[in-house]
Structures are given as C-alpha cells and as structure tokens.
Length: 492
Image (cartoon, rainbow, N blue to C red; front, side, top):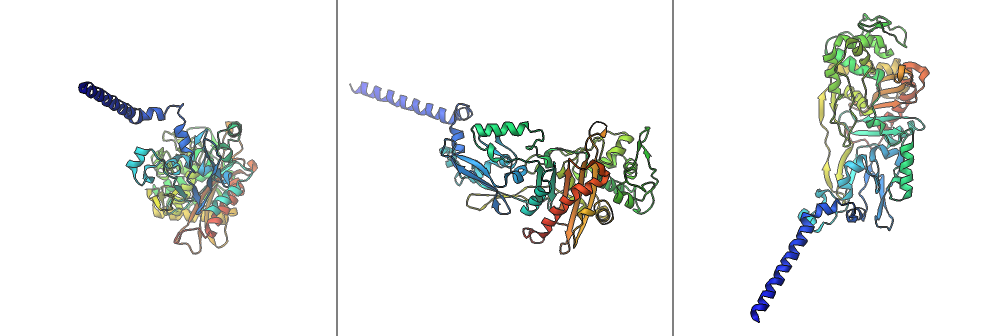
C-alpha cells in the first residue's frame, strides 16, 4: 500500500512539474508571440490604462491625458494643437504615433527601461512604469509668431539658435488638430479620412518633410564656395558677367528680374540678387567645390534626425556646366527643407560652423528628475570664419539696402537673403517665396536666432522681391520674439 502511495505521489509531483514547465513555456518562451497576436488586447489595454507623459514647451505641457472610463482608458489631449502639431505629431489609439509622440514613445508611455527603478523586477512582473516627460527646445513666443505669420497661408518656418543648434520654432501651415485622432471610435476614423482627403495635406510637416527649390537663398552657399575657392577675392570689383548670360554649351539665356546686373560686383549682385552673376560664379567654382560646400552645409545628408527624421536636401553631384549654373541659383535639381536653409543662415551667423539641430532638450522621470539630456555638437565647418564674416556683411546689406528691408528690426543687426523659386512645368507654378535671416540684439555677443521662411502661395507678380514681401515679415516677427523673449537662456 505504501509503495502505491509513493508512486502516486511521484506521479503527482511529475504532473506538477509538467504544469510549472508549461506555465513557464507560455509565460516566458511564447510570451512574445502572444503579445504580438492581434487577438490579444491586453498589451493595448495596459498601454492606455495610465496617463501618458507630457511634452513641454517653455516649461508648460502642451499635451495631456483624459480619462474616458473605457477599456482603453486614457486618450491624448493637446493644448494649441494646430500650432504644435508639427512638433508633437499625434498619439492615436487607432493610428499609432508620429513625430515626437513616436520617437519619444518609450519615455512618454512608460515603457523605456530607464524609467524602471528595479528593471529585473519590472521584467518579471510586467508592470508598466508611469510615463516620463519630454522637454523641447522651443521658444513659445517664436512658435506663436511663426504660426500667426503663416495663418491662412501655405508654407513653413524653422528657427535655430546658431551657436547650439537648438530648434526655437518649427511651424507648418496649414496644420491640423491632433486631438480628434486620439480615440478609437467613429469620430477618430472620420477625422482621419477627412485629413487624408484634404488636398492641402495638413498632416505633412513642411518644415522638415518637404523639400523646395531654394531659389536665390542658395546663393549664400554658392558665394561661400566661390570665396573659399578663391574665385572671388574682391567683393566690390566688377565681374565679367553679361546680362543675359548664356548657359554654357546651350542656346538658353538666363536673365535677371533686377536691373543693373551686367558686370555687377559681387556685393551689388548679392544685394539685388542677380541670377547671371551667381550662375557664372557657380560655374567658375566648379562641381567639386560646389558639391563639397553644399555637403558641408548639410545637403545630401540622409542621416539627419531631430530626433524624428528630416527629408534629405539635395544638391546634384553629376552636373554639366549648364546644369551647374542653374543649380547655383537654387534651381534645377537643388532642393532644400526649410530646416536646411535655417542651418545655412545659422552657419553664416556662427562663424561658418554648422551645429546639428535638435528639438529635445532633455527627458524627465515622472517626479521631475532628469532622465537624459541632449547636447550641442558641431557637425562640420561649412566655410572659413573669414568667409562667414564677409557673408554676414553682405546679408546685412540685403536688409539695409536691398530686397530684405521688411526684415529690419530697430536696435538689432539683421542679415537676410530673399528668394523666389520657380517650379512646375515650364515654371508655370506660383513661385515659392523664401527668406532666410539671422538677428543679433545690441546686448548679444553673437546672433541668437537664424530663421528660414517659405511661403508657397506667394505673390507671383513680385519676382525675386516676393521673398521680401511675403516671407521677410514673418521672419522678422520670429526674430523679434526670440530677441524680446525672457525665456532665452542666460548668455545666449
């Protein structure tokens, strides 16, 4: 009898071991498969069972969470949603996440392992930590000025702090309110369908995800290449530049909207934006010098992230002389995001040094302690400091005596460059109006702000001056906001 009891006990122990092994297999080995199974709603329910961390601008949250009392309990909310949508993106229970909501999702949702006080215990219990917060580099007044300036228009604004690369404003218009996309009901689906059917593409982040022909604003890059290559030594010496200028080995003649461009000096050509002079300068500098300078400014860079990805700005490296002439005035295949052109203006303001732009200042734990910080670092030297100094003087001349007078700020040094970019079949599209600039207050040791503005629906009748008429006032408002803002860091 005892032997039978012992056998039964051993058998029960084996059954218990088998049960434990099977439970371990299900919970450990097969857990990833169950977690990824579309029929399993537990991860989704767990994700939304607590409030999401916030994105902060100027120390204040521009996001929040509301309790719906449903299975997917907390939905995302947004303050000034359309103004900050090009930065925050959206966090939707149906359509996922975009922009900062996506790249910083681990911190915001609480799934980042760095938020766990006891990582091994958290892995065992599968507990979700409270969401952390993301502090942006934005200056609220600058963001507001850019958003207001583009109201009713189509275009984008990017503003940087030249010495660090901190992004001070990032605006795209038309924009959208991310709030209606947050839930999982019919209202969210209707909002999604409406936004995707909109021909103006409000969910497209034009500041970083759309490239434009930069037009005459690219002449900054061309002149930097020509100066560093020694093609230009005297800014005030007349150039041998005919008007019109016949593109090399073609019958095509390039003309100017401005008058007095024939044999104009580089200074005069820059201030009045003479296409013929700069097309010839680009040809004289040559493809290798133009390509190297464009790359140093950030063109053809496929790896730029702020932390979400930025569309590649392009300068064609396989050009004949005629194509090089057109590329040197920001046409042909030359394309740039507004952020890229803000980097160009910032490099001029920063002694020729390009700083990597970044949007996240730091991330924080729920209690407010710092989780991680972002740092400023130089990418490359786009031009010599002497060339940058000469360009700053030329850009100041554009604002003082040329096409950029609408960007002037009382009591501040302002440099700028206007541009009108032709596009469409036979250049039939309404030109894009550009203005890139920097500003330095009387108490600043160096310019604290560089801006790029593009307006897609600019006045086509103003020629190259449209950048000064349509885009320059927006740039001025953003620069004034930064110069006047009490939120600027000490010493910036």
